[in-house]
Length: 291
Ligand SMILES: *[C@@H]1O[C@H](CO)[C@@H](O)[C@H](O)[C@H]1NC(C)=O
Image (cartoon, rainbow, N blue to C red; front, top):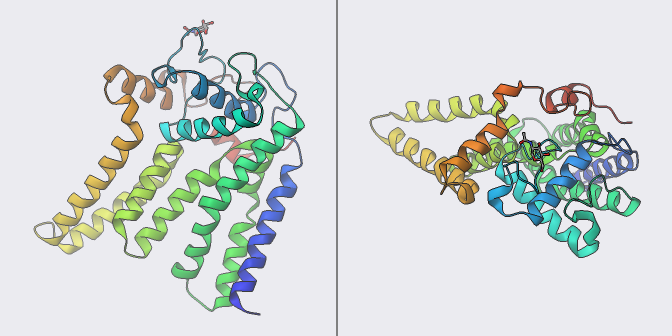
């Protein structure tokens, strides 16, 4: 069979598996008062839609940080805002301030699941295909087999479509970073990885290889010549991307400090918020529970 038909079948298999898993319940369904990550994501839509940016990361009368306070970087918040605008069009009750807490319904679940699938189709799956075709060795058949294995990897499917999270966004952007670097587009790769970092701070796990690879490339080209120019270009790309993502917070140092404090709550310990109801991202990555 032609390679393109094989790869289409892989993608369709991947999509079917994802959608099949999404029919099951999500973690925390029906479990008041905190529910699970599904409610966290829905609550972030409610908060970002109804409150001014300056309040997103602060505890205020309208934003109780004790109840799923926003603790991911700004790109996640913007993504929530985007989803909230669509949610508002379909059913305003889904993102009503305060009264939407713990909102659950079949149509809302369909909406939430669709947002995950959409992000996967737009960001993660194309990166996987490009990675397999341009950056792995071997015959076309082997590349197709690699793509199939990655697209059917159970860990990611169970957490995003069972438990409920958007890891395909951060992992997809990081993979776009790998594709960029692998193809020699260092600036585009740096841009993609910086976006990943600004979507989910867990991408810091992957930052050391990116940093070492890029710095090594600059050193190889000579830090007194071409390498220096590359280093400056990469640094500027990263800085400008960060500035772009953090724009609404940059005018006030208090805002920057508060966002950082929410992202890295050192005083609360790494396994944060409500020990009994929130499985931290670290634990749920190791033990996804689809209940
Ligand atoms: C945060 O705000 C809520 C009300 O929105 C309040 O009940 C809670 O005590 C506040 N928490 C802190 C730590 O100030």
